[in-house]
Image (cartoon, rainbow, N blue to C red):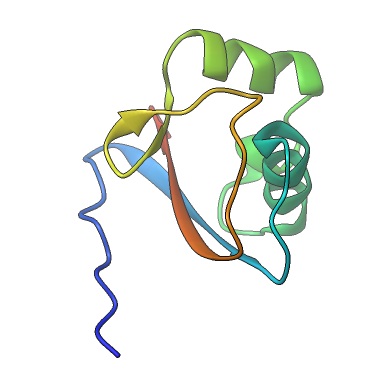
Length: 85
């Protein structure tokens, strides 16, 4: 099986979400993943309000496209890039 990993934008932090089941909202899953990672201390300690601001300011991308907080996520691997980190 050939997995296409999208190029990571410059000056961004990538989170890889590997979901066993589809999720109806991206924001809750992403917040938990950010708090569980140890690569970026600023994102590890992010508040729900700060995450909402990142979504509103178009700083969260999936496959080079703006993601919305209420975007659903499919089962499997999703690469999320957070710009400015």
